[in-house]
Length: 121
Image (tube, rainbow, N blue to C red; front, side, top):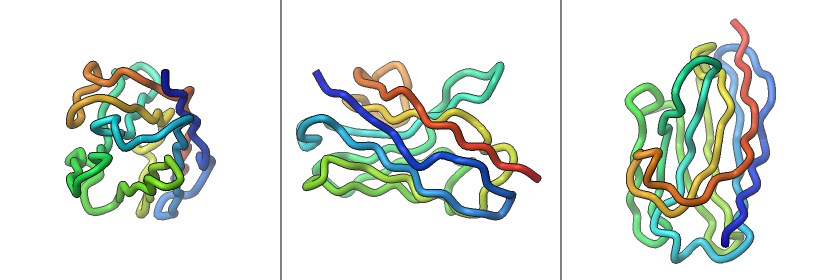
């Protein structure tokens, strides 16, 4: 069993930046991929970015490409999501997940509790 704990959410004005962190309770090296997903009120959960835990491979949703960067620190069992040029449309609960493929939400086995990101215009 893997437990994931997110941090770093908050409120920011449009154009601002935030960095999210997700720390796993154990090694992430065997978790295939870890990723960030988000869910806004009334919308389905969607993939934002994912990263393979051992090779250099990342995926991004078109809506965040060029603005968000996902990275990992295997020694700290942690992944990050650097979010720049934030837009009000980025407002959502952001979830960390592990054990899945690409940005396919339903393929991920482990989920954190989420951290809220609110972007005001």
